[in-house]
Every structure is written in structure tokens, then in C-alpha cells.
Length: 198
Image (cartoon, rainbow, N blue to C red; front, side):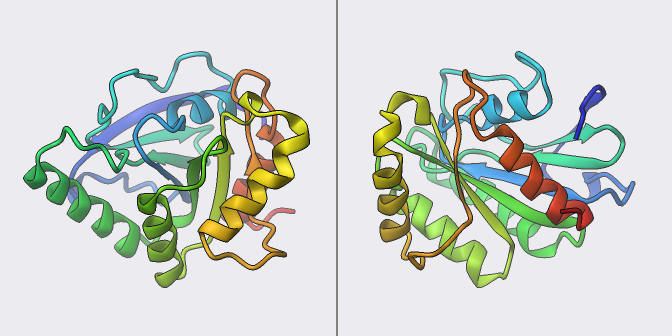
């Protein structure tokens, strides 16, 4: 998709605040600081539209980005950040669960993991949970420019093994924000999910 127009239309904490336009939605999930904002910025051709922060746990609401008046990217609060109080974490958890399980417009989830390491326990739990609810999920391995190209297959194998995916799973994309590697592949998946386009 050629993106010229994007706007953050709302930051929601409750279903009554969600947009009512009916556009398809793609959620972005991942632990704090895994690169959700960087991925969003690359996909929408902006340098710093989605705010990147070195302070984990910054996103505390569901942020709906209207892309070309055709779909929404929904930035979900990062998980696995210890400095947030237990009650805050539970509140986030309920908000995220409500959105992911009850939103008809949600067409797919992009789950981000760090390509440099094995997925964390939280990553695995999130993926299993999305699978349990039957949500189409794309795994995007961020920061892949930080590992040698020759080790990418190894990184993908480690993700599959840790997340208990079949060896022929084809829903993993290596991604680099600075080099824009993987951008087209991620967009292809998003368009397929949102609009049924090949």
C-alpha cells in the first residue's frame, strides 16, 4: 500500500472509545522496546510519527492509527515490563484481552519478537494465546540487521523451536527498520488479512 495519509485518531482504554468507521484493524503486539513504533513508522513511511521511546512501558492505551482511510493499525501496550505495578499490568491485560477477543474489525495480529534472542516466555505466552483464539498472526523478528545475514535461518529456527511452531511455518518475517528489510513482506500479509488481497 502506498501510504500518504496517516493520523492517530484516538488512544482508547475502553471499547466505547474504539473507532466506529468499520475499517479493518491490524493489531501490533510485542514486549516493551521490541520496536513496534519503529515498525509502524517504516510501514507508514514516516520517520517519527509513532513515538519511539527509550522508556519501556510508555504506551498505556490502545492507539488507533488511521491509514489512508482504509484500515487502522492498533498499537497495543508492550508487555513484560516489570516496573509497572501489578494492578496496572492487570488493567492493561484486561484492556488488551477485551480488544483482542471481542473486536470484530480485528483481522490479524503482528507479533514482534527480537531477532537477536530466543523469544521470551511472554512472547511465547502471547503467541499461544493468539493461536487459542484463532487470530491470524504474523511474527516479525525485529532488529535483524543486528545479526549477520548468514545467521538468519538459525534465528528463524530458534523462533520456531521456542514458540513450538511447525518447521514449515511460513508466518515469520525478518525485519530491519533502518534498512527497511521485510517492509514489503509485512505489508503483503497485512493487505491479505485486511482486504483479502494477494
